[in-house]
Amino acid sequence: MPFDPLSSSCTPGRTPWRENPYRSVAPGYTTVGVLASQQLVRLMVYLNLENLTNVRQTNFDPLLRVTPGEGGRRTVGEWTPLEGRSANAGMRVRL
Image (spheres, rainbow, N blue to C red):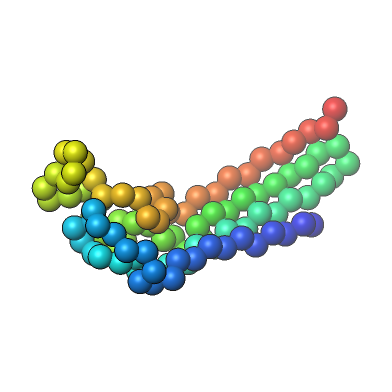
């Protein structure tokens, strides 16, 4: 069974911001994902798990600004995943 661990991370303090009213640099975070698949004759079954560490931007700061920013923007920029953990599974049939 093929097994592919995936991960990404952000080093704290490396990304400066001008347009975020809640902080001036990015905090560190790590996300982990796993993709597993199994070939069964003409059928391939797979399972994909993403962001197992459940990192979300709302765990750090709000998305909405207290006052509008440049150009009337009411949200801060995206710098981490917004959706948290996710999983999907499926199958492919070879005809």
